[in-house]
Image 1 (cartoon, helix red, strand yellow):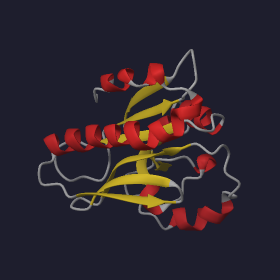
Image 2 (cartoon, one colour):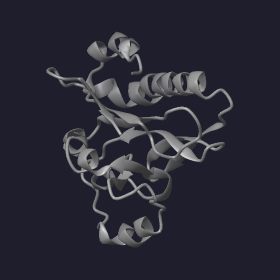
Image 3 (cartoon, one colour):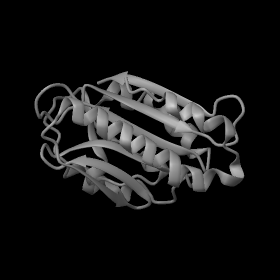
Image 4 (cartoon, helix red, strand yellow):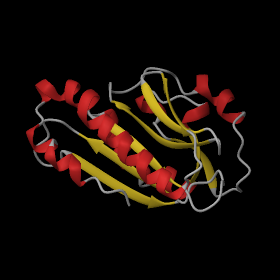
Length: 183
């Protein structure tokens, strides 16, 4: 599991008024560094690139053609109908057996697209506990939602786990929520 302790230096002092600047200029670069360093420790020959699609960002390993992390600021519920992406999703490879879905790293309800945003994900996770933070992100405009995908040795396409997080500036009870799931 990634050590997110550094976030505690910033989150208690982060108000809604300065959240947008802090999330973009301080917290997101910190998270990207954490993920890139963690991933590089396990896969030294990786070739990481950062790409942006539809207001969300993605850390992608070009050498293994797999998603490492995805993140973005919630704008609330997306108005794009699901049927518009259904055809595109059917074209995404899924040869991992019936237990897996074409899971969205950034949920469709938040504005996540297809292609780089799709990851083989256990159906029992994708259609179950993973939805808790997804729904909370949709109902929390201004919050930073992220997923960090964990892979075993080799260059396989199926993650062995995922860390899913939500940072909610101005929230007093739970400014940072993190869930970790085996895949």
